[in-house]
Image (cartoon, rainbow, N blue to C red; front, top):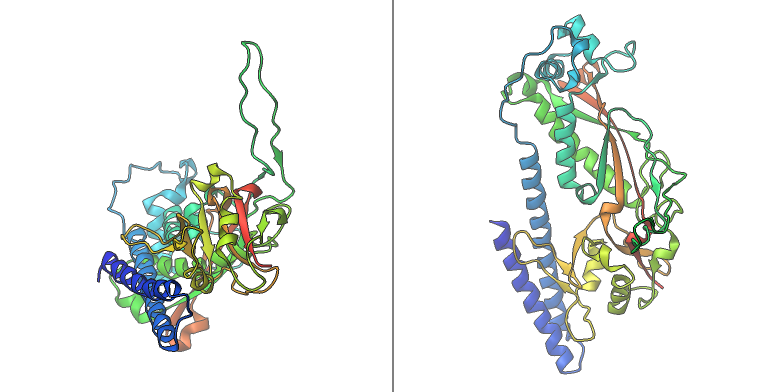
Length: 406
């Protein structure tokens, strides 16, 4: 079934469920037991369609990202590897890496091992992946992890530190001046926290039989598995990370990230989100940030929001009804994440609204892969450990508003 058809079916269910609520409201009464059961059943179906739609959208994005690119003509390379500007970007390097993944380090020539060896040559087996492997894996991760798709990303040749401007408030407006004047001065300070890629490691196992018989690229197969494993950890970190040897999340109050003065609880109760609270949050954010803003909520929060109306009697939550439309709250697209907070008690964060282009991510491109043979020999498998280094943090507090209870 096409995504558009699934969205249309979900929209029809939402319309029918809202008709129940509107009828009870018009008659100034609560839903009957039968109506409540019917409403809850329809909402379960809406959630089910939503899950199917999200799964299909993510799958298609990953399939698109992982498509094997058309072969390109590689220009002649200098005879000496040292003379190459970037040997990791060559087709020769990639073929050597594929050979390593299939058959191990012993099948590589001494020259190939020396070119691909990571920092610890005595450690045995850690090789640096080709840049195309890393960039294609990151493309798949970007399509899965919504923060990466919206954030500003920097690619570092190595896991070096990247100073981040401390943007407590944005620059002031430009001034109208005379011919020789320069206008008021603004200073861009650097915060205490730097973007310094931290190690993230994952293990994937592949059957020896599959490696031996498959005509597909083992590199693409491993890249697909790794992109999924990394995606889960990264989304959680971008939302909830404490910034210690990992990214600083948007739901973590921090002077170097989003301050507590960006928390808005007005209009909400101690245990639930209310329409007034969401309206208050929306209009706490300055207009320039609203243009690219996204809501982020857990699905349990969305369940509450579905029943809310504004002062004009319009529902705040509207389902996307075309294939390229996200659901919206107060006219702003909403993203549902399993890693958004879902504890509804006083003082807890329950959602965020923000322009995620002010979340910065630094990725190191010298990703390392180790091949483990003996450890999984009993199960006829080969293990691949990948070590990827990345960091992230929000850089402008006023570009975000956190929805808080109480």
